[in-house]
Each structure stands twice: as structure tokens, then as C-alpha cells.
Length: 151
Image (cartoon, rainbow, N blue to C red):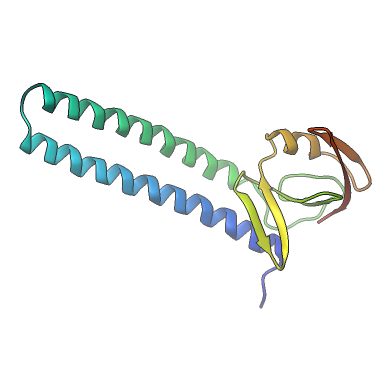
């Protein structure tokens, strides 16, 4: 059975989060290996500088990992099914300019020859769209967008 457009966008966002999480995990593991080899092979000031740089990078990756975990928690709230007359979390929004999927910010996605922008409800465009109904128009960056359909 062929997935619906909403299901395809949902799965894309799910995979986007998983891939990002896996990439950060691999980078952390790589840093762990670098830290171990730095400990074995270096001495003196150069050694301390190298360890400090690795530690800073590890902290940065730790913060990124925390962000991805938060993104996962937010995405769990996105319903896979459901219809509403208003733009809500999980909506497909068709406008006179572009199409949007309200879930997480995951960029541009093409499904069944239609291009969608996966956006979070707390983004500037998401904030403007949330709660709107078909036929309503919004202004964004000097352009007017009218909602032609909500799926």
C-alpha cells in the first residue's frame, strides 16, 4: 500500500531526526577515540592543548545531542493522522506560493512531485500559519500567501 503524502512527510522527518542523532553519536565516538590516542601519544603543553580542544568539541556535540533529543520529544507530539479546518501540528498547508508540513524544521522535501517545506510551528512562517483557515492570507517578507487548502 502506497503511503499518503502526510505519512511520507512524517517518515521523512522521523528519518531526518534519526540520521542527525546517529551522525552526532558517530562524531562523539570519534572524539572519544581521538582523546584516547591523544592521551597515549602526547606530552607537555601540546598534549594539554589537544585534550582541551577535544573536550570543547565534545561539549559542543553534547549540546547538539541534547537539541536532537528535544526535537525527538517535540516530534512525538506530531499526529500522523487527523484533519482540521485550521492549521495545527501535523497539517499539510497548501498556499498560493508554497506547500508546508507543520511538524519540525527539516527543510525542503519532494513527495509525489510536490515540494513541501517541513517547518516547526515556532518558526516565523509556522507562527503565521498556525490557527489559520482555508482562504485566509498572511504576509511574510513582503509577500502575500493565501491558504488554498489544509490537509
